[in-house]
Length: 323
Image (cartoon, rainbow, N blue to C red):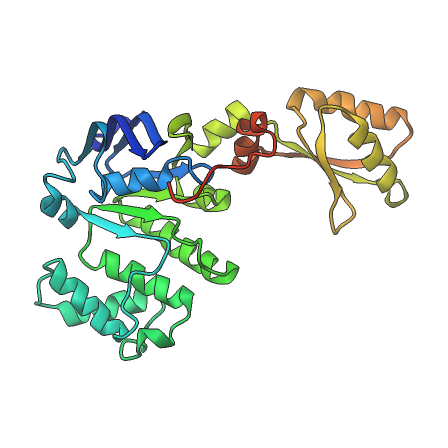
């Protein structure tokens, strides 16, 4: 639970869609200035949580509060405090980039004094300097998503809700948007919620991660805390070149070790190795007259934590999308 003053609160929230329960008695509090990632399979409840906070849905049971206000009954006031970025870019392709930002300024009541300078600064911030007069229909998906982020941030919202912000982007565009979001999270001190299934994204952006499954919280903590509690880490071994395959086969036969592979540099990587197991493992290899030149501990990753939490579900396949 956060130690900061609460900004976003869901208390005992249940939300159903026909016979599907998207959220099941969810209790979640997010403090002012926190950057929180909502992780989970498709259908875990991430998008439903974001839509409830944005006032786009109402809860069947429980209460939802944004800064102490109900986002449905106090919708107009709450919306002034929120910036919501969906997976698909929220821009009008018939307009220019500048026109999109001017329209957003009018809708959200941004003061006209200094608006032109502010718009130019936003375009520059998101790599769109000199493109203000270009029609958005000429932009790539990545540029449209950057413009969407500029549009969402133009009114300077106190709370930013990001729903799968890079899911529609190619890897290069996704990396650029993640970097921009990371800078926002680090510098602006606003409350940020990122609903994502991208583990690298959550690890880069978030100081707290909440994993959802079937509309309930499975775990809640910082990436480091979750790694320490649920991850095992692994090893990177440098061995004699002519013994690489022998070492790989021996490690593969050890029941507790998984995902043994040889990397491009000819080193052997193995996941699922607890710290206390390392001395015995190295002794076993040395006793078999296999030369081990270097052993490096690999820290647990958020991906390993996530897979470990869902290993009880077999291949971890999720339900339907969009909730």
